[in-house]
Image (cartoon, rainbow, N blue to C red; front, side, top):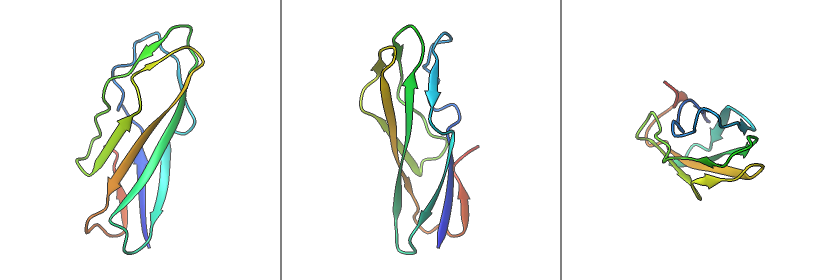
Length: 99
């Protein structure tokens, strides 16, 4: 069994200083089956601020991680989701995509 930990660090550096993004979780522990070549994940969030927030393309710390946003602008009170795929390849044991 393979176990992977992914951490949400500064993937969204385009958030303005007055933005209030509330993330449901800040880290995930994912378990892949022995023959899996990738594992999908998502981080849910909500714009708790009084202003709209523009998000830029997230930049993962590892080329083995691909992340996407469905859109870039989130109005106050609006919820969103950052989706991603972690490419396992030939990695075994505990892996961390955080730096």
